[in-house]
Figure 1 (cartoon, helix red, strand yellow):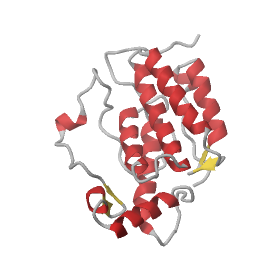
Figure 2 (cartoon, rainbow, N blue to C red):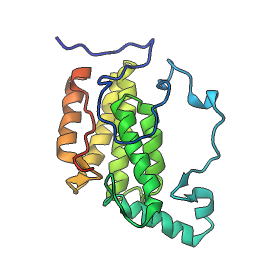
Figure 3 (cartoon, rainbow, N blue to C red):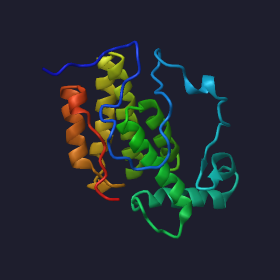
Figure 4 (cartoon, rainbow, N blue to C red):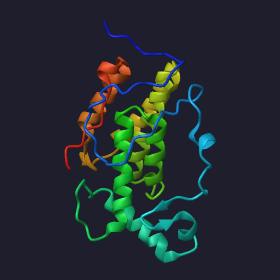
Length: 207
């Protein structure tokens, strides 16, 4: 019989410690779960209020029209890139690696950390375009996983509903290596029966 995990005294384990990795970046030493583990910014000084993406930071891009165009170009590549891509525009590679790292973080139950990784990429999109809705949907599903772990089922359902709605508006069947139809079905199955056995691992179909 499957059991919902609602423990509030410890961080989650990896449900599949041997799951395939899509990035080379080391996983964090622990998972941040509000009320359970220490916020990373309390262990390390917070970064400046802008992020560096593809060699361009948000502070500069607000003042430099060329920088803004570069950010838009990077965001446009999101619908085309795949692991191992050899696009001459390597400015987009930082975005791609950040997205792939977010996949690894989610698959190993670093939900808050996955949220942070994907948000960095999401900020370079137009927010309401397909790439933006796709990334925000993943961010909300990841946040919903935290609610599930700490036993907040209503919070989980709310975030899953919002996340699934955004993913379902994406018309591209395979976006950034993810088969959306299959992935949405897995998330819906988990929502109906939230358990480690039904965890919706994100699997890339293109490398």
